[in-house]
Image 1 (cartoon, rainbow, N blue to C red):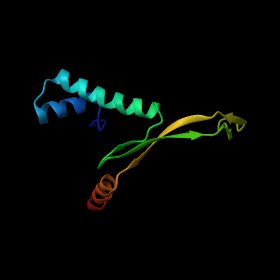
Image 2 (tube, one colour):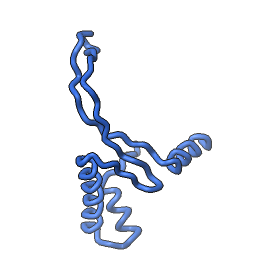
Image 3 (cartoon, one colour):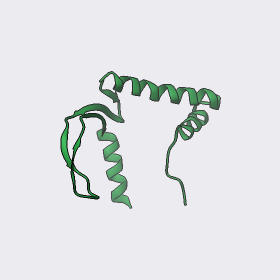
Image 4 (tube, rainbow, N blue to C red):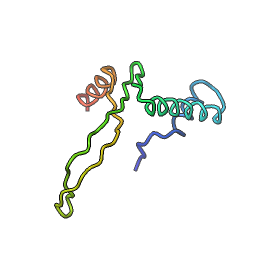
Length: 101
């Protein structure tokens, strides 16, 4: 079975191969990239990466839900969630590849 998961290690190897920098430096850059995105989201900023997509924090209100195991009502607490909206370029590439297979 082929692993279809892209990890920070995978990204740093790709960066090393493409740019020719040391693996350790590439991993530092990948870490910095994701830390910057996380920090922006923690500060309630919208993180827009051109030609890729937009990350945004949404505030969910407290609501009534149901435990599917025992069907009892339960309160789901208010929380923040991160959403991602892919750019048109990414969506078009995904949809194009679906039609070709």
